[in-house]
Length: 356
Ligand SMILES: *Cc1c(COP(=O)(O)O)cnc(C)c1O
Image (spheres, rainbow, N blue to C red):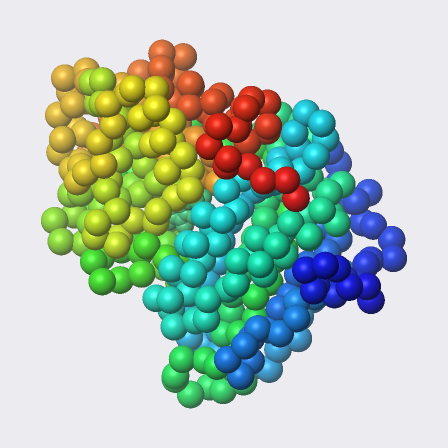
């Protein structure tokens, strides 16, 4: 064991498994890099974190998170800049969001030094796992679990924070076909839609499986009262370009996950002088716009997919097709602009990227 300046004990792997990856064909989530970070919370305090070789874990079957889902996570990415250095995109924003999730789920705050500092130490150690090449990145998965060995129902007292990482190639390589869901509901005011809680994903599996069987890629979730107001697509924030205005649902009802990509897109569009609106948007308004030829572009945003163009929306029996992708002004510009910043190809005026 060696100790670092940030008090992280590091136990290095004897032989790197980097040879496992085929750099020309990286499949998301198939390989995990050499090391992982692990830290325990007990008696009201965080213990010293450790970085150890990636390995399986051992738990009592009575462990809380297995049963009651007190579990949250984050998704961050590191990219190789032209100098071959790993840079991480907006990790402090993910840190803040993790603690918003933690708060709602009665879990302890993760200290900034553990989340961001620990991440940087881990990425620095596993820098060879950050792929170099268009559309590639290292996906970083921090997560927090309740680990009391107690099957009774109560907020846990012991927690485990971990970070694992996985090399990623392009996530969606085709425009997504969307089914507008007005039967199942993802989030409602007072619920946990704004958190990155594991349960939000668990509950989406069945509805998603059903629409995949019907030939669609993702669900456009609508609100729980009128089943009209759009929320998100799958696990991405959603944007529509109607006429010359870019519209995305606002965050006021706590039903929408405040995406870091969403915020980046809004910032870049506003700086460019594009008309942007964060407000309630109904599927009826989208349908009317489509009928009038005013629905110009639509896309999802998220760390995994970056910008995912939508080729069609199906609402009941109506399929709304979007114009050919080549004509999309905003989406194509955003995709390139965001990629240039993430890969450190242009000056980072917003200080969004941080060296590992
Ligand atoms: C993670 C996530 C997003 C995207 O957030 P980013 O910070 O942009 O990755 C959007 N919606 C949901 C439901 C999510 O879980």
